[in-house]
Length: 208
Image (cartoon, rainbow, N blue to C red; front, side, top):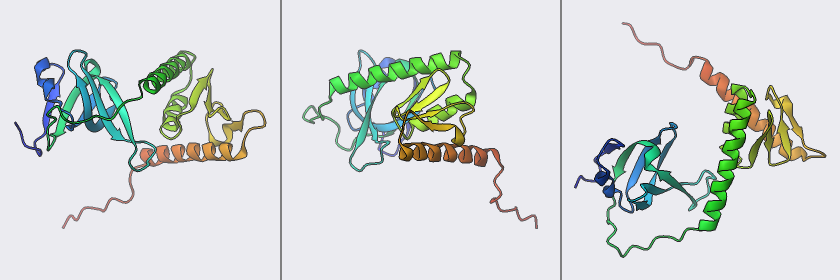
């Protein structure tokens, strides 16, 4: 068996038996066919269904809080085993219980959101609108598409062309919520502009 500093990369063209190496405690990184990248510690792996569960740092940033991601290896392009467990599971390790009902609810919600996003794409929502939608979901989970408008927390709507000034309250609304969303939108466009401009901080090479 390779040591903990060895990196092993498997692709879905490899023999299925190779994936038996995903023991509990293994740290892996992977890239899906949708070009999404994840890294975390294996908490469970079902060989028959090729379902891999990994524990990742929570996007909330809270200490001692983790997200559990369930990955179907049929939709994963490659897996990088970054670190093997120091104490391989020997059948005595106790895994944390999962709230299956909560997971199923989240999965159902994500499917609905993907369906709304697909409808938005077919309705002619601009690339800026789609990219902003995705950017906001990284900070706020309660984001939906209604026709061509982005709706955040059922309190703020962002209409085309999706600029900060297009953030409006729904109904009487909440001024704090609008300001919070507007700051997120402002930061998004600032980041986009920074990425589009060549870096001015790069030192000039010494040609002497």
